[in-house]
Figure (tube, rainbow, N blue to C red):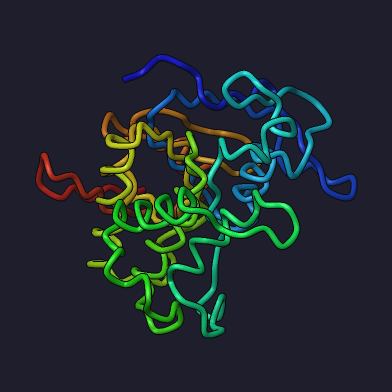
Amino acid sequence: MNSEIAIFLDHVWVKYDHRIVLENISLKVSSREIVSIVGPNGGGKTTLLNTILGFKEPFKGKVSVFGVRPQDIEKNGMIGYLPQTSPHDIQFPVRVFDVVAMSRYGRKSFLGRLNGEDRDLIVDSLKKVEMADFQSHHFGSLSGGQKQRVLIARALALRPKILILDEPSTGLDSVAQDQFYQILQKLRVDEKLTILMVSHDIGVVSGIVDQIACLNKQIHFHGNPKEGIPSEALIEVFGRNVQFVLHDKNCETCEKGL
């Protein structure tokens, strides 16, 4: 694994309206890793992403992305971001091609037009997520898994080094989830991407990520989930009624619980 540090948080504290949401967060993500942040609702997962993206500044500690403050790199395409979506997002009649093109328009001056390079990047990004044949389809007509692939393509059209995804598999059935995660793993290798994602399903992501961070205001565990997550950390994050199935193609399905 590449030892270059892509994302680094050093004793970070974040608050909203005088209430501390993240407490003493230290996190290191190496280049080309896939890392998942898991934890309960309200545990600070989305706030952590917003802090890494530069949307929220900590009142203590430091954050860097490839050694640069997030606020200084936000607009240059280094990070591709897929926010949490709902089934009602982007229901207007827009083509798949145009959804991906939105990221390229963000780099244009007012009333700027797409050029040949832009169009090639859009089509190439759709090919990478196996959606090039759907570029003329209406986005709203796609399945949930297909929509998520198109939104990944929109992020890829920026040529990012990092993909940040907030609950990307929400609403997908098990088959669509598996296909989606396979694409992420392929993109990590082919595009040399670092991938950081929030997930509610610790069992599913534990089988595909390099590292997992269990977050509930603080990080209670950060490491390789295949080597085992301490029961004390799971109790701190999820409470005592925890049970999950670890899906690992290298072994039989393993069920763990507290």
